[in-house]
Image 1 (cartoon, rainbow, N blue to C red):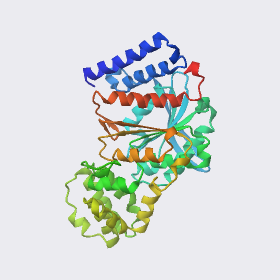
Image 2 (image 1 turned 60 degrees about the horizontal axis):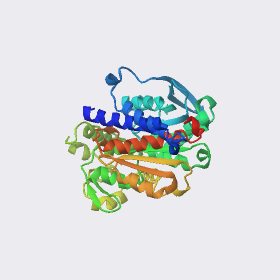
Image 3 (image 1 turned 180 degrees about the vertical axis):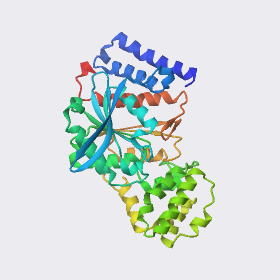
Image 4 (image 1 turned 120 degrees about the vertical axis):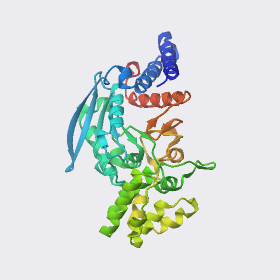
Length: 386
């Protein structure tokens, strides 16, 4: 992080500290203290391990749990200070899963903000398989935390979902049993409609509700989708060829795959044509030609066909305007579908899906998002203790 950015963050920290010191009556409920803590946490989050002088102050340990016969492996992160709330942190589609270094650092950062953090191993997403039934894994993690007293201080429990984990997380939050146990959701770089997300992944086009835009997409999204659906193809030859195409393209966007495409049956050809298409006007036609089981999974993964007005949890949406995997318009659309009184949306430039390359103006929005999260953390707290 540049010296200018560090100065800006320190000024924000000092400004909020000054408000706390003044002790204005308007801030007697702890608002100022939380504002200061959000600024301090954001400063620490932006620092490298070298700048911090060592690892983050928290404890991490492996954990196994079982819900209705379904067994899970996870990690639990505990703060050194008294915890104020609990979180289930869901990783996106990544082979590293719960052990992906950026996720580990983020979980540790959340623990320093006095959350107990459970990070389950989401097998589907670790295998790069986007499945609607991942909502069961989410619901099980929430249920386990909610029913383990030493993991849920103050009976306050939230979910933080990254990228494509946002869909199953919000879907799970709609289930009556989960809704009773879940207080809030933070979705980072999430989606609303899977087909519009795939339209962006293949063509770069998206619509923000006002006008259409085009941005060069990161091919990671569409080839992960290919790997996700390969098992739905009937032919073993097709499955092998699509896997080879996807892996070759993930390693080298310009790699030639003609000889592999030539081996595909019509079923797999339909999937490949959908993914290789760059014309937004052709998406609906190509989508119609997809294998029925692939179309069914796209439908099941989408949130746009669900009544999100029924959600009971508070929802914080954070999305990068420069996201090249899922466009920020997906969080905009998601915010419009959720109850306005319980939804907060923060759009930040310099947030490239999950990687930060922030400009000076981004810190204000990130501070507001951090404050919103801490506000949810303290929702069940006695105001004088927040």
